[in-house]
Image 1 (spheres, rainbow, N blue to C red):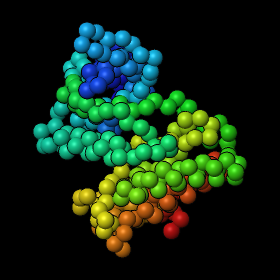
Image 2 (image 1 turned 30 degrees about the horizontal axis):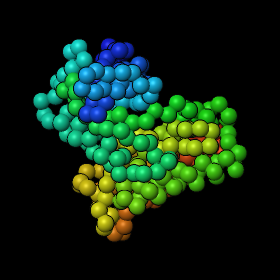
Image 3 (image 1 turned 120 degrees about the horizontal axis):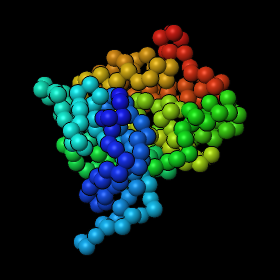
Image 4 (image 1 turned 60 degrees about the horizontal axis):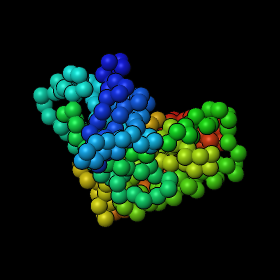
Length: 255
């Protein structure tokens, strides 16, 4: 995607509680663009710049959306855009339920430019994947320390009948050298108390090497319980990457 489709530096987004000024684009994927933004405190008589930075995620479908100025345009006439926008809203709704030092914190969800955004804390320590690339491998002790914290984040999620479904080193940011923070809940899914997913659609294939083989075609309940083993598999695969420096082999190859 060309940067022509990204909001330009200096663009002001009006949230419900704060205004945000775009500083730069941090990254983009098939369903969203993430920006670094500064917070502008506003009141009845004016606004001031706060020395606070946040990450802003904008719903933007690479294959469907365009831009007219700052406004997002849609070429979809089949309801595809609205359907996935609702899933995007579900992502931030899910995120707002979690209170954990190892899960990214959401500030607010808001509508602007004919699309939807959410603001979240900005973590500038880089990803666990970047740490592994720099170090080559992590020690067994370091791996266990980080794994325990990531496991605690998963425990919080699973207690709310939620799966992450895309756990991997690039979706773990480092608040500091010892504190991993789980991000990117785009594939996350809510289950009921019987282990049934919120819809009858497949839950998403996840990332090769980190997703178990059953994830790609899972549609029903898993022995009447939350299928938390899918995230646990990904946690083990993440440990593999930390210890070896290499991406784990795909589940189908292991089978």
